[in-house]
Length: 319
Length: 290
Image 1 (cartoon, chains in turn red, blue):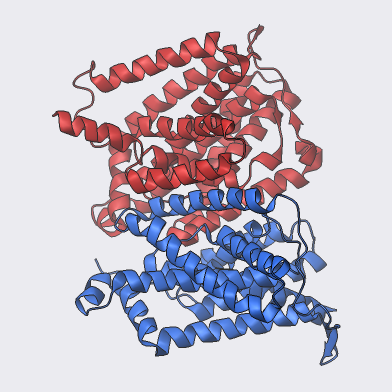
Image 2 (cartoon, chains in turn green, purple):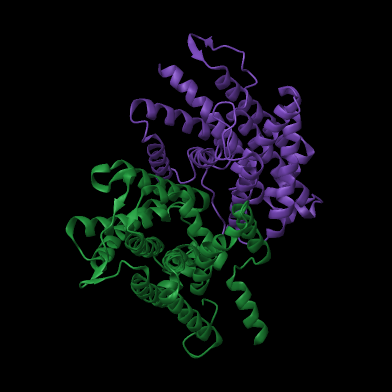
């Protein structure tokens, strides 16, 4: 996405039609597939949303986060609790809950302003661990280790608890999210963030307010993760702090690297890889982890620019 | 009471420090945070366990054999996984080590099963002893002594051997080192071998204290990273002290404040330390020329 000079000039490119076909496939499979398949498709869409947001932070502005499971968890719990305690409908509680996570994301950015590389990685990792612990221990409010039962997602008396129906809500968020990220990436903010990644000193000399944009990047990516968390909560309807662990944060990071940094279709590919490949490997009774781990290594060694790199190479050859 | 807590903290801290050193040796040489270090250590420990139990060697026979195997393991990982990624973004290498972590975890579970094993301690028949009136468990004393010895050995190797100096030169400036005739690849392989050895020692020390199973090292890996960052990644000494501090802080907090919150509290503390000192307590802020 980033490297294309004028993505808006031609609408009917191969890429767009591929994306369209993929969308149609996802819609058909989500409406007519089996329950488990529908669940997997929903999961891919939710994780794609997280990856798109994390891409703004890592791929565009060159920061790093090993704590995004924390934002995902805050989004899930905030919207779940709003729905449960205040009887709020899910389409209101998810954005409101995400506001909370966005504010926390902006707050987290403040200490992160001075940190770099591994220091930043460990500080954000600490944020994720602290968040998970707080959810565990604040039993009266969150239900603690016993988990939280999230109410049925309803849209004006229309029940969305079936994954096939929930898919439309998730797809709606994904399309809006991808469109918004595209706008941000190609606008003033995106250029500022890219400059930040290349050189903070140079960005500062050009009059780009470094701390301002770092806070924006953190808050935006927290917002995406939290929306995804909220959708996840209403999709599975039972959440437990156990699942929002460091491994999940690492998994989010792995998704964007596997898919390809700084690319929205890449985010989709990375999320799909992470959800679907382990499913395909279930046949290998003994060693799904072994094959999956080795496939991560193989993707990185053979395709250093991620899965999207194959596509870019193909396009470069064609032109 | 407080003295015992500090000794216990130093013992677990020295294990964090060993993992932290394993990570930083590789990080300084190749800029890659090795997220596979935990499972590499676990794997080496299982190998030692197998030699110990199946072939009936004594601890003193097993130890050198394990360390040699660990060094080979480090070189293999560097040559097969890391070398092709030279020049690629660091995050790629991070994800590759992550993949390796998952693969090794699963491989170990296939070979040795998911159940817990009991690894005998080399000091199983040594009773607790008093050190200036403080009760000390022999395993704790061993961890502390061994880790101090390891850091001394590594520092000496890096400062005073030809290969060590070559390694430091290669990690400072690859291009110039290459022009000076230093085989870069061999130097990096040595860094990985040293890291793997430090990790294997940590695994051998921790296995008799907790039970030996495939999940043994993953909490230790995160603590190792945290300790390294707390001290500052600049030198082995600061990393070592950072690991020890983390162990002591954690132990004191779990005793005096809350056992269940001690991990979260120590991470909060690390975040606050990093706000004040963004390169760790003993780290100097690197000034970068434009």
